[in-house]
Length: 330
Image (cartoon, rainbow, N blue to C red; front, side):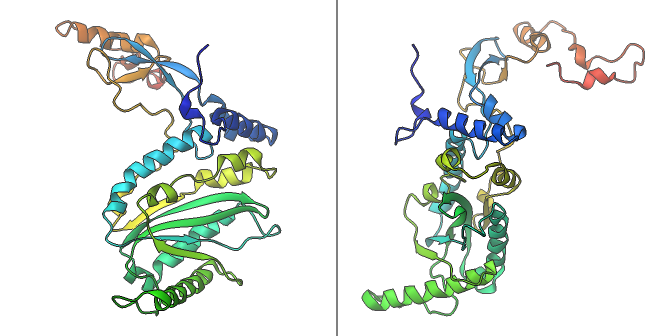
């Protein structure tokens, strides 16, 4: 009997495919078939066909959704790998965590959009733009006793983050340094509360970024364990996550920004090279008749091979194409 994939099990022993199945069952019970269908197809086995020699290899389908426990780990690893170089290039990397007030009565999935709008207001403030050269913003959603709790992690290039509190002089330590840090944190907290348009105080954490700041800030968008174990409805939150951008880069880090890959479907495994030396693979469920002429043409370059049937012109209208010519042959 073939054993389980070690990467499908997290350190605490939880089975990621089982959690994915639990989330899919919840979505189906809520009547959200459009959200459950990608999870149902995720993990299915299929074969990839080499375009050079026709050799096949085994592969798995991936939905690449933020709320998929299996694909979320790959998305997080790709983000960390892309933005790690940007964080390493910062002169003064700083880690900032911004929260928003929420209660059991006011907690709602739309808080994610309210948090995004507040982050935009914060970045447009003059004092923030003058002191922060650039950074990366990531929104994370957890589930607690008061419902969904969105908060933001920022990794910014900033020497001293404050509104009016001066930066500590050289050699400042002890109580004087703690007093300045507390005053600066309170100033930033008041400005963040105004950006949120909230009445009560909010919690703000500011510290120097550690070497693993990218992994801490970009680890996940929403905890898979929370989605599998919570009694709250999942559809309202996931529909907002599907159309919201939860990660962004600006300023000096803008050139490291990557496009959102959540909706791209199956992605080729990098570095997979066939024995013939070719690295071009296509899913084997594509009609073999379409690619057979290409494979044979590579084996015999001097022979003239006809075009596939879906690219041939209509005999009745030589200058026009038939409607079926534009339909995929699978």
